[in-house]
Length: 135
Image (cartoon, rainbow, N blue to C red; front, side, top):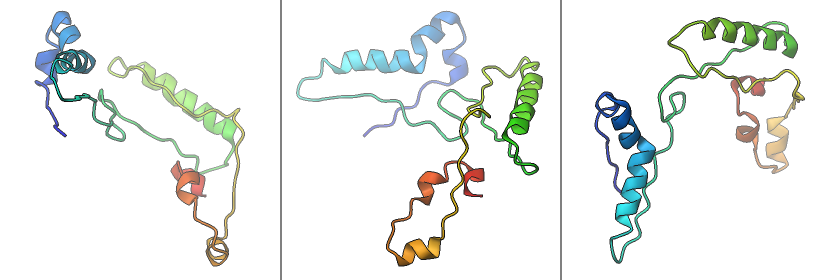
């Protein structure tokens, strides 16, 4: 396994032409084509996994949590108002949300001590994909 660092992004994106030739996908594709010429080896270049909250292209992630009424429609309204105001800022682009108030919401109350005594495997890490889902 080799980890390769690219030239600084500011230099790679100085012009449209350099950005097209030196973006991560273009570099990996070009390297893959060259690596196919190596006899007796299988070389597969892959991009590293994203850094949680940052991704592979930059940016940030945030969560809005309802600590009040628990009304999904009200939370959706707050989310949409927030996104509307955030989209007015020119430095923020591609703002999206995965939340929707029209998706069925489920709540599971699990007695962890009882499940442990009964030998039922814990699946709380699967259920707990968002901080508020454990409440």
